[in-house]
Image (tube, rainbow, N blue to C red; front, top):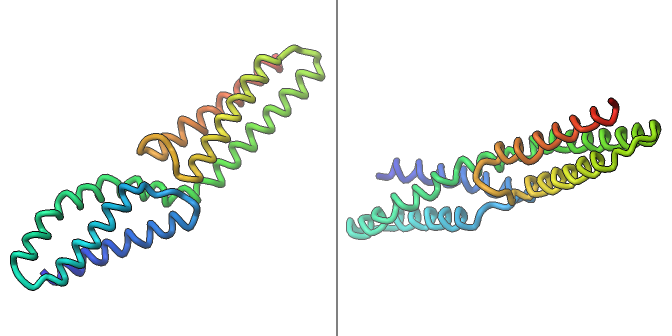
Length: 170
């Protein structure tokens, strides 16, 4: 029992370090997960302090649900912890899209082509991309799949922005 409790305490300490690291980087961790984590820490403390079998039994009845809540969110926490590493790539994509819009605007002006519709589309996509990047940096994205959100909300839209100038050059 003591060995199992020590493993749980190490596991919880690891999660706590990850939560602190993620929040220190300005990324929001879901309050439901933080509540489940606090409950798990409380259960571990109560187990450690238990003197009778009944006290341990009372605590152990609550463990499966709490562990399930933690396990449901752990992959998301792991993805959130990696956001700072992908921030550089996101910023590069935004810069690339911004340069493409500037270049397309200059080309349209130089060849006296009315490309206002394409440029407006590109600009609105860029606004969406910048909003998505801001949400990613804060950790306030829709859904549980951070990488899927990055792909759909940033990379796909930047690719669309980069494809639109081809109609201006033609």
